[in-house]
Amino acid sequence: MEDNNFVPYIVHESDMARQERTIKRLWILCIIIIVLLVGSNGAWILYESQFMDETTTIEADAGDGGNALGIVGNDNEVDYGKGENND
Image (cartoon, rainbow, N blue to C red):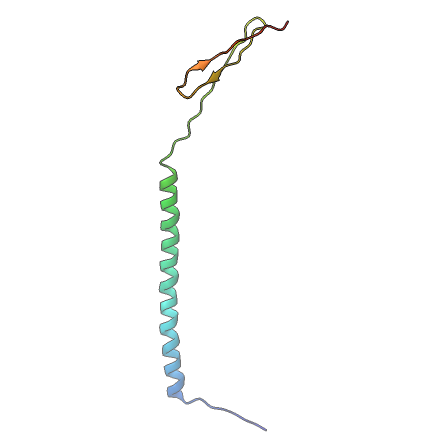
């Protein structure tokens, strides 16, 4: 029941040469993919670094029991409205 199938040396060598070419192409593909990923992330970092965060701090003092309510309109003018003193 011994069924030994032998592959000729020429067939084995041609198969190994084909696999070596495939492996070389896969390595080149991996290097290209890594370069593209790094380039893509660098492009996003460059794009996002163009914008600047702007912070506005407003302090208000109501004084002696007054209202410190102010509404900023579209033209950056403050409208204090009518205030009431509820003591």
